Structures are given as C-alpha cells and as structure tokens.
Amino acid sequence: MFAADARAELEQLRASWLLHPRTEHKSEKTRLTYRDAADQFIAFLADPPDGLDEELTAGIEDAPPITGARDVRAAHVRLFISLRPAGPRRHRRAAGPRRRVPV
Image (cartoon, rainbow, N blue to C red; front, side):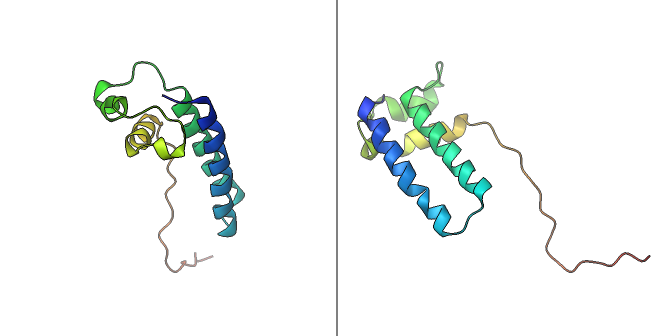
C-alpha cells in the first residue's frame, strides 16, 4: 500500500505542516500531539495493522498504491481515525464569573 519514497515525501510535508501551529503560537504540548498524530498516520500508511475490517478497507483496496502524498485518499484518513484509540477528554469549567467563597 505504501512505496518507499512516499515516506520521505510525507515526512517532508509533515515538517512543513508543523510550522503552522508554531506561527499560531500553539503550546508545545499541542505541537507534540500534532507531530505524534502525523507520525502515527505515516506509520499506519507504511504498515497497516493485520485483520482490518473489510467494510472499512473497501475504499482503500481499489485505490492505487501510495507513491506520494497525492495518492492519500479520504478513505485512508477515515480508516486511520477509526482505528485510533480515543484519547482522554478533559472537561473545562464553564466560562463565567467566579464566585467568592465566604470565609
């Protein structure tokens, strides 16, 4: 599913893409999360897990082998997202005035 030189092209695009969150002054933790997700996606394309659900892979099987970034399809992204474990969710406190606690 993945040609050898496609990894180099995708890693180059990843490095360029990761400059954008820096220009938006995203936190270091956010940038690391973005980088890790991009690395996981590239690794997934290079070596998809065994035993994938046929329904999920239907759109990928007809796609040509990935020889570069232009060959990555929405079906690849959807399959990758569907296989990622859900991360922890943090609930934020509702925005509003803070109440003073009587002392």
